Length: 272
Image (cartoon, rainbow, N blue to C red; front, side, top):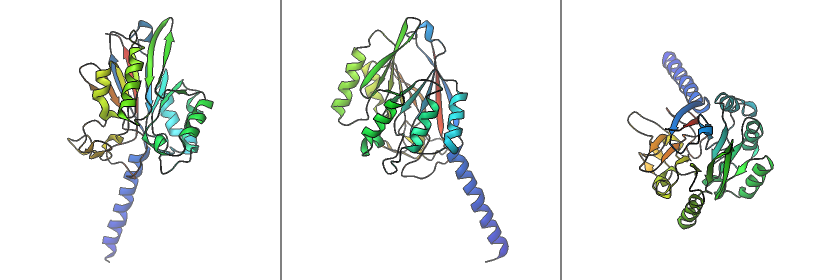
């Protein structure tokens, strides 16, 4: 092979490798504003940091770069919308390392994803999170109070049967009619169910930003949405509610991201 061609190919491989590494490991913070007249006065400016689809990924030693980004976002609460592990890589060290560092920043609220539920570690994960002080919202809700005013935060265990999932959602909504209702649920493709239920704001993940993001697309593929998916990122507004979709942090079957850097979202609440 001509030496110049070899040098060009070697250089191209190095550049491509560096680009893919940067795309996979340099986290971006995406900020959204959410306005609703139901936001209580004492929750004006309340900041919700969302972490989704970690998939057992390690962001440098002791999750240092991820923790640095979460701290920088200055959260009032941290919400995790599932898939802190990968069903094929179920070592819990990286996930719990993040929790151990993040719990000193702000209270953490968690709802599971498909990978926790498809692994044999579900019970161990829930126990480990509970021991670390995480608020487990698996078909459960809690109230967050500030100076006598409250909002409701609801969480769904990743879907097992659609009827169980839907019934759990509607039951929680009906019990919290007087409050702003924030939902943690892994799957954005069920937006129509959230919108119909009476939830005000949903946080979802699962789609990995469509994995490869090309111009004029929301990515090439997302689980349960197929090719050229519609709901992979951003904040979406529907007839009765809004939904934040995180592009997530890690990878699963497809080993890297292209034009789709790992993301944490920050949503700030405001009353209209």
